[in-house]
Amino acid sequence: MKNLIIKFSSSVIFFVLIAAMALTMTACGGKDTVSQASTPEVSSQSEAETVGKGSKEFNFSVVDKDGFEKKFTVKTDETTVGAALQSYGLIKGEDGDYGLYVKEVNGITADYNVDGTYWAFYIDGEYAQTGVDKTEITEGGNYSFKVEK
Image (cartoon, rainbow, N blue to C red; front, side, top):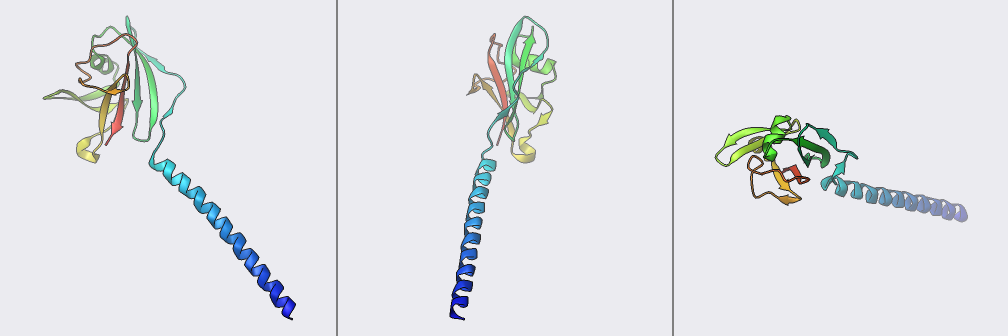
């Protein structure tokens, strides 16, 4: 009888240890998923969509609040980035004291008054020091809008 109790106890301890290891492994996997979700990486499409016709060409990208990036190659005869993007319906906004306040990019709205988000304008990866409507096109330049909070 004593041997039976020892075998039974050993079996119970063995299964408890297996269950604890399984829970530990599951918890570690869940932790990685949470950290990835809180800091989304930018995912991108492989090819840029070409928009418009004209003698000038520049690269334009849109990064939404989830980190998804959509790329465009813009061809235009306009002189400013803002005029080109508005002419193709890629940006919409309101005229304000400091120029065009962009609220919609590629059909996606970011409104600070609603949810604290806004469209940040970047030139060659740097936060722009000029508004999109005042930025003259540089041939082959890289311009982007990113949702920020």
